[in-house]
Amino acid sequence: MDGIRMTTLGNILLQKEILLESGTNELEILVFNVGRFTFGINVAKVREILPREEMTALPQAHPSVLGVFQLRNNVVPCVSLRKHLQIEDDPGSDQQIILTDFNRMQTAFTVDGVARIHRISWEKILAVPAIMATGKTPVTAVAQIDGKLVSMLDFEMIADQVTEKILREEAVSNPHGLPREQLRIVVADDSVTVRQAMTAMLSESGYTQIHAFENGRLCWEWLDAQWKAKQNLAEIADLLISDVEMPQIDGFHLTKRVKEHPGLGTLPVLLYSSIVTPDNAKKGEAVGADAQISKPELHRVVAIADELILSRGGRAAAPKPPVVETPRPAPAVAPAPQPVRQQPPMMEQPETYAANPALLETFRVELGERTDELKEWAAESSHDRRALLRTLHSIKSAAQVVPVHEVSRAVHQMEEIALDNMRDDASIVGPLTDLADWLHDLSQNRQRFAALLGACPDLSPAINA
Image 1 (cartoon, rainbow, N blue to C red):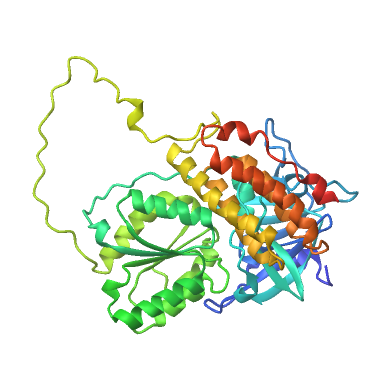
Image 2: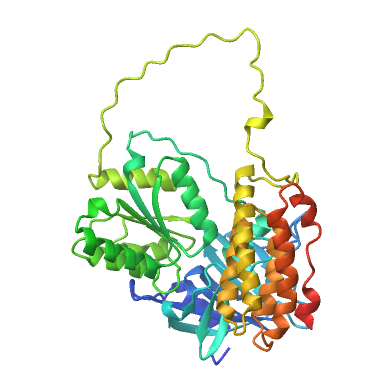
């Protein structure tokens, strides 16, 4: 471990001595290995490093779950990254444990070895926002460290896959009578999945004026330009909701810029991230965040948005006349069902899908657009792999929301191929074309969507080639 003893590193993480000053736009990455692959995780999500523990197996657990073990007064579930990422076993593998702490839950992950901690700027995180989705999509970004690219694993995604957790959105009541449709909300999150879920939740609850951005830099540039043009915060935004971990400018640095701006400084900021633990919440407070919640608490976003806008003295709801509801007599017979033809046609769905038909239709349309991007990339004479990875990530993020695990798995295989720096671009075009053709068929055949999922191409031979 580059001269760092595991126990020393574990103590440093446990005591949080390495946490950075708030708003510096830097992060610290713990680099580790699983098989021949090198991965990274934001230190803010890591509690400590441990040797391999004795596990108690659990019946009917996810195949990636090794079991549970006792750590002090807690029982901790343990996931094998090697099994989850389908990396072949080696002698002496899975010998160390990274204990994570995010989304108000401690989860352990076994790895082959921990290297060291690197401090880098968020600007060194390549804009491959939330590169993975459900199924087996492990990467959320790529970090440039010492001249090499390190894949940042999406541990929240892996945890969701293991627990088979799905994002859902439902409308939230409006007890304060706020004119939500008149209020402007700005959202910054590098995850297409979270951005879509957030927008859906807000929109369903009446907040229809939403400006969403995929990273902190784009958000800041828009806010700054709006201020220069309008010089009136009331015409720009009533609330900023931001993720913490984002390429270019992170949520802490974005918050700091907003709060230090002479015109934007009174804009309420809600930080919404998987790493809003009690320890990390202090960093948000230091830069002036008005509220912080963790990502599993999606249902709380609307209520907290209401409170922040009200506490700022935002636009009060217009007086409403009292509503008198006239009781309706119960019908003597049950009303006839509405004709099916009044509903818009939607694709057939496997019984395992929990999403609503409208979301599946949105996914199908987006899939068609992204497939065109894949085909354009394959046809170009010169290739930008980062552009390809961004498109693949977008497809997987959309697949996570639905979810469509078959698409997630196939695109994950394609990303493994594209992330292999030893490959030339010509060796990528073949499997990419196979994937794009299948995705195109899915996007164009609404009625046969479910059946076509069974024809998912297997790109694993290309991975091992």
